[in-house]
Image 1 (spheres, chains in turn cyan, blue, red, yellow):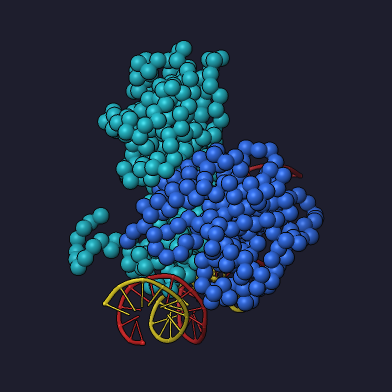
Image 2: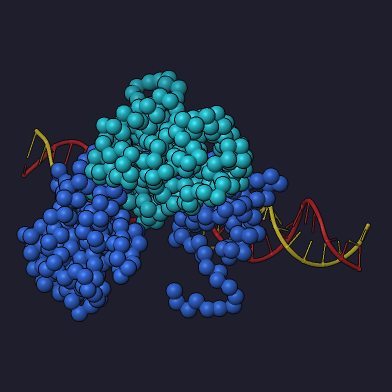
Length: 268
Length: 268
DNA sequence: CTCTGCGTACCGGTTTCCGGAACACAGGCC
DNA sequence: GGCCTGTGTTCCGGAAACCGGTACGCAGAG
């Protein structure tokens, strides 16, 4: 922020913690916001820290399995351990309670199963879920995963990524087909994503499981992109895509509530 | 490991890092796996750490915004900053997601467990892994490590190093023997590496674990040597070294895809 | 073969961390 | 009220980790 000064570029990051540990953590944060691998030299320029210091920090993080060195061993990326932490965190987040309440109220209002979802790698993961009281329903547990290109949440989240990120996900693995409605053509998917971005919601019309319809909206964030969705799902028997759109206001209200819950964590 | 014993229950967690920072991080991990708020006392009992120490740690984490105190200020939960880190991390894991997709497609094609591996220090580390659907399989987690001289990936990667580098790796640690197939003689290993370099692939014929066969190929890089492999592994019951060679084309195609992913993630 | 850019190792001075002991503040019980 | 127990908090000297200037190794470019 605050362009101001001076000689050259931003020079902003300034990963200063007041304690060594916090500096390390800040380094992790910096790397986690990159969607590409970073080099020692690049970090030196970006942070202004002395090279040996950064080298030691990276070494320590790598030794702990939080970072891994990529390819020619001079590029660092996030490690499996860090990803596991992230998934656990989102699955168990302590204000889960509050979110769950919102979700339950939503289900009570609209009468169909609702989910909170997030993107993890190339899949969508169910963070939380409240079932419809109706006897006929689809059974998927919290923690389970579904493909990204044929789920409402997946398309919603995809639409927030940069073209390069999306390309990376799909260039090398085909869009598997699950039903005859599944979008298996990249261009068709891109077209769909454009629609999603414009509308602010995404629909899955039996693209993953026959007979299953979903609608998803984003949980907004004050800053930057969001990695969470609220979505409703139901059998076509009870819910057609048309009728589903009538549920949008309720979904959006719920998403707004969740955003507020997230925001309540700013103190010092 | 070692004694275990003893007085009472599990006492398992043992969040020992060898450095203060890693202890803090382990504490974060522990809290992140909890679905509810934790108290200082509870953590004392769970970790066995002295109370003042934990108190200081929690204070530090709270000060940094990674944890927050709930309500009556004696219960800790995960903070907004940590959640933001988690979301960023998962959003930007597209590289990992793309690689994982390629790997999954490969496993689907050939039907056996496949890995992505890299050289880390003097060991081979599993970066990612997709398991075969077969019920009989070897169980190794992503992030685990195997010796370099008796694994297909290890030999493949070794063959890319300069003689000086190789010498440095082995000068100080003998070639431990794991099975009666393990190459424990430097000269024999050098001979094998020469073969590997010529063929462009490496085979592990029960050199590390009895009954385990592996074949590895390099993920090529535009520039210089590679530090990544794609490898298939299977029990001898299903896969003999001979049959494994028929899988080479598929492996190489996957490796090529990974190379392209890597190429798109280099910058600054 | 030098030259330059980057990654890596070394090491003394300084900062941070460690955790036993002691203190503070409840609430529950006589 | 006085006492006790279970918690959260503060102190502080000894020990350990971190810091980053300097120097070295190893590429690839000129």
